[in-house]
Image (cartoon, rainbow, N blue to C red; front, side, top):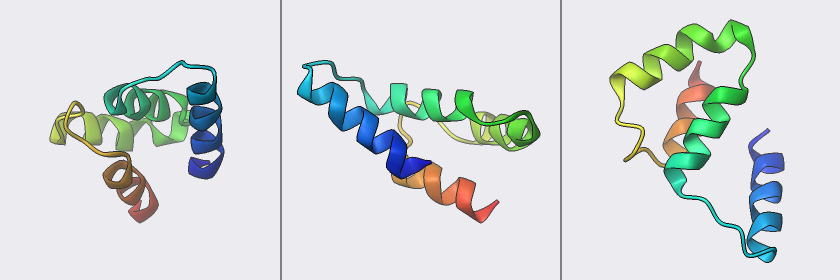
Length: 64
């Protein structure tokens, strides 16, 4: 999923459309299936999403 997401992000950069890391984190959390909602809620409450990197988010999701 992350590789596909990165491909889309790079494609948007070519089209001169860029987003912040915070936007990327929010989009990934929002697109997760319903059974991931408890983990998404835990990440939102425990971490500051504005400061979270994509690598941190992906490692948290992989560990789950």
